[in-house]
Image 1 (cartoon, rainbow, N blue to C red):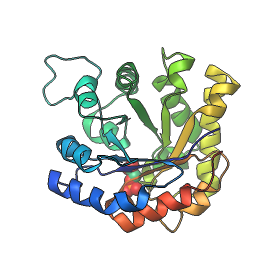
Image 2: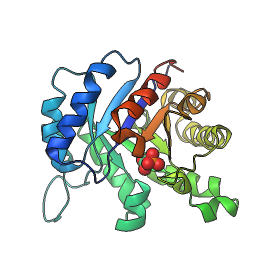
Image 3: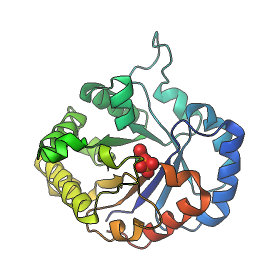
Image 4: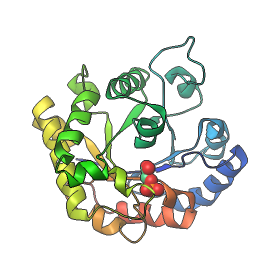
Length: 254
Ligand code: PGA
């Protein structure tokens, strides 16, 4: 049984006080949602967000995590640092990290494994570019990213991972994948997990869609059998929009 999970990726938006304000707007309304709801503020907003979330069922996520326990990695943040702030999820391998900050499949795997070791759930992002989709390379690219992300991970670890399928051409563009396109690729990712870990893990692992998901398209995407939630960027910055996505998603355990 898979419980849907909706995560808001706030990206490089929101000062600490703005994080607290947005959570103040969300929490009275999200309280009873039947899906997992996660907000991922920037690192600097995590402490204020945690305080604002006190007593709420909304959970806290970070937007990245480093693989080393500590040391000379200027600008990076370790899993233990996040854990102490009450962080339970960490996005890894977001396409913006891969595109602008040189993150590699190997680094994504190391970050995901470090998160798991600290009992933080990694939300591992995979997705093809427009060129790759048009060249018919979607499955090759997404399959390679997924296999690399799970490298050296046991089945017990893999089942705790959340995968986010985010076609790069759909992120922040207003151009959503059709629900059929999203379902097709997410079912393909589930098949990769089946190949690596067997049926039980494939049936249990949660795979989200991300890329211009919003109140208008969430119900249709969530109706697809393999789509277990969403990683929401732009629409997560507006309480009313995020709440609508949460409510469309709260309808069914799959
Ligand atoms: P978007 O971003 O919803 O603004 O397209 C999604 C994401 O990048 O996680």
